[in-house]
Structures are given as C-alpha cells and as structure tokens.
Image 1 (spheres, rainbow, N blue to C red):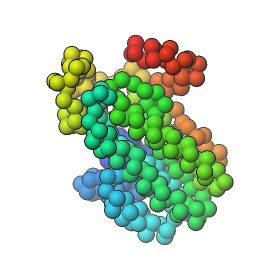
Image 2: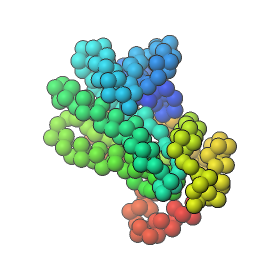
Image 3: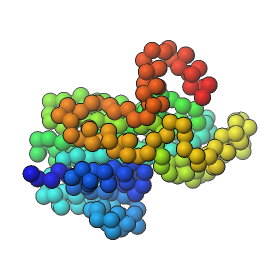
Length: 275
C-alpha cells in the first residue's frame, strides 16, 4: 500500500512538532516544514523531510510546496496548516499595522498555501485540508483581539471552503484546541513589546496586572493538555471516512462550545469577564 503523505506547517515546536512525530509513527510520510532554516536542519537531523515555508514569504510557500510535490511525484494526501502567533493587547491599543502583520502569518499565508494545494488534490481525486484554529476561533476573549480576529476569519473562510468542496472527495476540517502546552505565550512577548505602548494607554493599570501573567506565569493551566491531545484528533480527521467539520480539544473548548449554544451574548460576556 502506498504510504500517505502530509505537509505540516509550523513544525519546529509545540503542536506541529508533536503532530510530525505522531503521524510519522502512525505510518505517514511527513513533510515537517518550518519558517527558519535552522529549524528545518534540526528536523532533518531527526529524519524528517523539512521544506522551508514561511507564511509571510510567498516565494517560500511556492518553493516549499514544490519541493514536497517533487519528492512525492506530484501528489499530496493531506495538508495541516498550523503555524501562528499571538499579539496580546487591548483592541484600542493595537496599531492597524499590528493587525496587518498578524493576518499575514495567521490567515493570508494559510490561504495562499491552501489555494496551491487544492488543484493538486482535485487532480488526484482526494485529500484532507486540516487547519488548526482555537477555542478563540468562536469565542472572543479580552486582551486577545488580534489573535481572535485571525481565528474568527479562518473559521469563516474554512466553513465556506468546506461547502464549496462538498462535491469533491477533499475533506476540510478545523481543529479547535484550548490551552495546550507550548511556547505560545512565551513567543507572544516579543510581539507585545513591538506593538503595544502600554505605559501610555488608558488601561495601563490593567496592563500591570496582566503583564505579570504574560512574563512570569509558566505553570501549566488547570485544563492544559499536551500537544499529543491535538495529534490524536488530527489522526481521526485524517483516517475517518467521514471526518467531523470541527474537532474540539480540551475541556474549556467543549465548555465554551456548549455555553455559546445556550447563552445569550450578554450572558456569555458575563461568564467570560468573570474569568
């Protein structure tokens, strides 16, 4: 039986890294892409094929996919869009350029790669396109407006793509994790420092309270799960004859999905604001 292939983006750490290892163990031929050459080299030393793909660099998206297709003979069974980052800060303090920058990584690059993959999957008659969203893809949460905006947009775009490909054997899936152990919060610090002038904000006192958590709180959260919990759902999405449109991961995602269905917007806001 021919080994199935998958291209994973953002494979240098966290969810993408665990997915690369987990899917290889499950028998997949994994192309574990990263945005930095040194991370690609590290993954190659671990036995992976690792094309360079930076969502903010259109040329790397084209060449990274071309490298993958050359290795497989022009086919690709699955794509897992994963790489993303957060830029914490109150919406009123987010410069518009900060939003432009985060959308380049968290949405526009994903869209560009997906558009290039769809014709490949159409030609071969099948495929799976899986994108890593978040509980923040359907629930807003204070101080996370930039990230929430990209994930809400991703979910809408993905829903439409799923509908438009419903007459094909290309399945389109969203993975919606809650808190997962990773470097995500640590990686957000540099973006906060680049864009948020918190000392001159009307909310500077609130920032002082939030900064302690952003910079020093490294303890796992109460409901935090390891990245392997996400990999488990990806495997189901890849192997199920009829995959779900959405896969929740972690208790907070299930809880918020339930509350969103039963509560009014005002009541849901009250629950979220209580923390």
